[in-house]
Length: 597
Image (tube, rainbow, N blue to C red; front, side, top):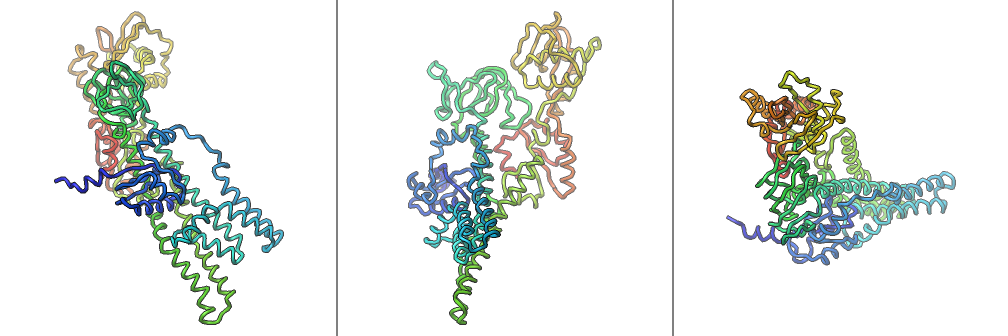
């Protein structure tokens, strides 16, 4: 039975892009402010993806007012797809290190000069104080603005306590210590911003996978149309060598399509009438006419981007703990500092000057700068070190979960395998022709082909030092969907699938072809008008280290290892046997891999 209330809630959800976030705490405050707006039932900020999902009714103006404390700019997601996000998808200009971090660098410079002056002129010297003050203001002006505003509103977070600690430190004359605290906090914020920028860049790279325009036939005319303006039912024309811009079904034409960007399949897939194609994949050979079946926001690549954005929104448990901790820790420290400053003079007639100083010292000492900076530094360092060794970890939450893993899922292409087609089998059937001589002819023909497997054959020829580029080929023809042909020294040679030689196949050869295909290999035959000369098998080779890695993981206590792939069942099983994984999930789309359990 359909839950009408739940359905209405889903329909009433709006997604907005947000520009101007500087830290996760600010994003959290924005979320709380939006939740307090009239007409808003719920709100969830995804800091990594710079967006907010609002359940209920809220205008852009109301949202920007909720984010006015940080001058946030808000755009409806669909609008930002055509404006701000389009700019994000373009190559980002690299900002020089000095310009990007000049605030922190200047603050550190003033701090260094302050300590030089401290040793030369003494602690109470005006020049020393001014240099430390300059370091505090340069490195912590934004912190102090927010902290003072929070203090006035009785909102307690890390910035509130940091601001109170800075004020207290200044009052008791600990200018150097205050400057160090401010700089450490500024560094922690830059580290957090750096990790989030990397997350956003990964999303931008995904946006560039599919083209922003497509060639569409409307009213008998062929027009270049932006993907946002393409409707379901439009006819899209995809030429050889072009990327497919939208999801759809082939209604005319025949080609091979490289789907590695979407499904992870290393070997291009043959596409003909009624076959489904996906945005972001590459049309290799023939001209295709495709009927659009999904709007741009519903395409497979759009779902992948959504999944990545959701993953970026999950913060590490330790980071989430720091935020919760600050909510209670800040007022507790302030109360303790107040008690230290007031109780001894009021109850025991102690010196006001001494105990107010001690109370302010408690604020400075109690400032959780080490805690604030430790989490982002630990996470960034761990992810950075792992990346240097070829391991990419998407965020802190995944890093922390690694310690308790009982099962692990590997993508096949490019992870367990090399991701590059390689010739695995080459057998000459006609004894009168030398293997190297025939390989030279095969490579010469493939050299003129745009077929995705041609590179594997040319690589084999180069490995065996067989010359092919100077071999003269006449009347070269690409037989779309079947293979290629060409004339060399008066003889016409054919290279292609078994369909091209179906009338010349015998039971023995047919059995050999089936056996190779069951091993997950793509089989090609080489022949002339009268005979089949050779059989070639190409496959995505397993990495040399894959079997050892999987075996080591099992020895370390991992109970289950799963291989996820978009390849067919036979290919997947063949690779799984070589690698030694315990389970296989084949013929998966990317969105089917993500929620795998």
